[in-house]
Length: 104
Image (cartoon, rainbow, N blue to C red):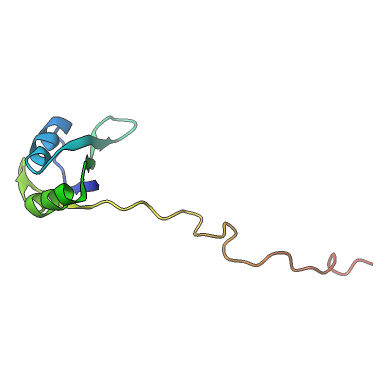
């Protein structure tokens, strides 16, 4: 199960998060999202846990908990919707047929 952790302090480390989540089960991975230019935390992370039950327990147990003076916002992570929105052409139909606008 993939879990989104929001409202992180910039001082929280991946190891800090791993310790918090391991109280609820086996943690597969922890990734704090960082700014590409500065390398600073963007204030959120993703934690992957082995099972749905352990993930649900971690969400229930850690949502609203304070870590480094910040109240954690924890929820199940869902895949982002496609930027194309399905059809890839803005929902328009195919060719309209017809000619070249009045040329014979």
